[in-house]
Amino acid sequence: MDELAGFDPYDSRMRNKLQKEVLSRVQNEWFTNYEANLPLIRKWGGIEHVPLAAKFVIVGAGWPLSDGKYAQKGKTMSVKGNLHLLEKVKCPVIVCDKIAATAARYVKPFAVTALNTSSTDVQTWMENFRKRMDEQWGPDAIKDVWLIVPVTVNPEALRNWEGKMAFINPENTCEELIATVFKETGLEPRARGDNVGYFSIIMAITLGAKEITIIGMPYSHPTEDAAMDATKGRHCVTLYDAILRAYVYTTFDWIDSRRELMEVLAKCKEEHGIQFFNCTGAGILYQAGVIEPLMFEEWVKHSEG
View 1 (cartoon, helix red, strand yellow):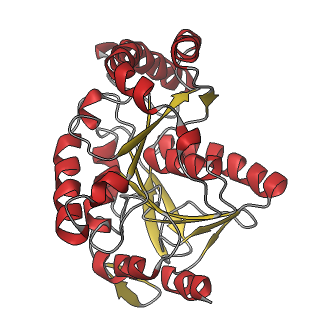
View 2 (view 1 turned 135 degrees about the vertical axis):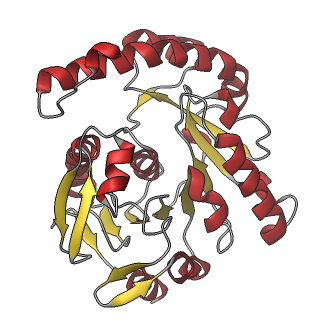
């Protein structure tokens, strides 16, 4: 990656080169992880074994949930002030990786999602989640929770998991792996998305949702420094957030992901009548006629009625 020093994010040639470098690095990990996970894949099978539901709430790990207090329309909200409303949610709740333990304080999750191909701190947040489930919901409660992951997930994410599992054959890997997974396991290729929030939305759609509500998915950072840290100092895009009424800071990867996700959601809304609400209260994951902004408190009142 040394030849990418001086990377210019506005140069499409350099971005394509970077993408190829990353792809070549992770492709071997895909195959290695799949082979290590194969016994569990054969044991548990695919997402078709997971119960269907008409509504889902998805909890992402992004700010403002992860960063404590933030200003929104003259109000100050916090993690506790937002997430405690999960206690009133009656539909299944899908939680994204690192937010799992925090969310489990207020709701018994239906499923946890994870994507990490490389080694991460997954065992740390998994252990925190297990402890929280034991404390809040009882020692056997985690056995009812689904872990939904791609077949390429790092095996560390599966180690010591005591609940149920469901795997998907992600279609954004490579033709060789997709074909191998289908031949050896019978898992049809499915869309995955490029981050765990996107993946969770796709999974909810796959599970029959007609209404999907998300919180903790801003696709942005609250500060320029945070965005620069996420890109290792290479780039940051400043945008005005009409919901937060302040500037937020995002990255090219998130802008690209947002564009793709909006196309998927618009198609799902048009063809299947699925409704999408973003109750994060900040960020760039909104689009008129596709995914509407709504305060989580208001959504809860609406859902109770």
